[in-house]
Amino acid sequence: MSGIEHTMQAYVHASAALLELPLAEGQAERVSAHLQRTAAMAGRLQAYALAPHDEPAQVYCPAPFPALPAAPSSPGTPS
Image 1 (cartoon, rainbow, N blue to C red):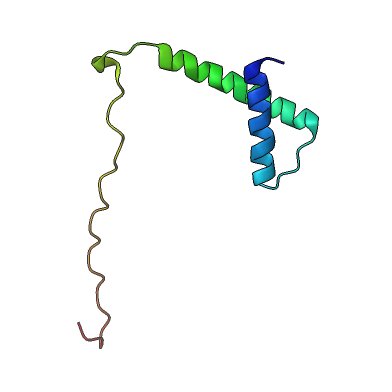
Image 2 (cartoon, one colour):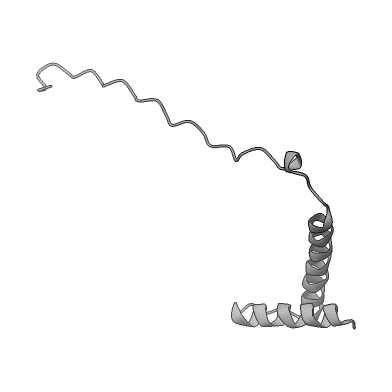
């Protein structure tokens, strides 16, 4: 087992214990393998150089809802 595999296994076991999540050894190994793949993908993305024009656009912020018209009052109800 390599250093990263050992470290990831320890992380999975510690996290599961902290969350009181019972994990069989096989489950812990699969979670560890998944996290290692995710870390490898993140490393490749972080290593890719981006120029300022490559950055994504601003985060979408929806416009506020328009004001609703006042409801008509029923007869005999004070306005």
